[in-house]
Amino acid sequence: MTTVFFITNNYVFRGERIYKKEISEEQKKEDNLLSFKGEKIASELLKKEELKKVKAIYTSNYKTAIGSAKYLSEELDLPIYIDERLKERKIGIQSNENETFLKDKQKQDFDYKFHNGESRNMVINRMKTCLKDILFHNEEESVAIFSHDIAIESLFTIWCEMGFSLDEEMILNYKDQVVIDGAYHHHRIFKLEFEGDKLRNMIWVQEKEL
View: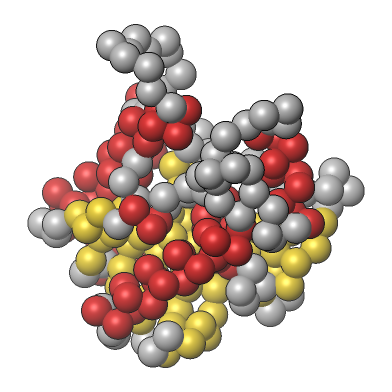
């Protein structure tokens, strides 16, 4: 059995940042840093007994993901493997519509995207391919993957039954257990168990908000 922990940490630095040249909003998200609370959340992962058994650590290329993984990497003396396929959904060029419109539209239409952006199906394909590679190289081990909300949520739709809350937020259930509850969470851990590349179990490890 291969155990995969998907971990998110959305406590990001909200202060003003000055850039020497104009950069895209996508680049700003990739370059964002963890807040002090985010750093605390990352350090608290060392207290979780199951994560002490991890043998490989993967992150997206976002600095928040790398920053979230660094404490576990140092504690376990493991390298961090950075894979861009684990990044958040690329928004693309916004015209008359904003990011909220995109998020709502993509809940219903997994092929919808802005120009030069990604649809949910595009995200699913890259996340699925990345996960397959990780499983192949870490059979019968425990792995930690630091990624992002929409990317993880999109991947989970492969295995989960999808529904919506009264507020039209996406809810995902696996074997009648809620793994995505439609609410915003600053930090979450999901535990998935695989035999080969076949999912056998998935649970959401509920994290108390600090």
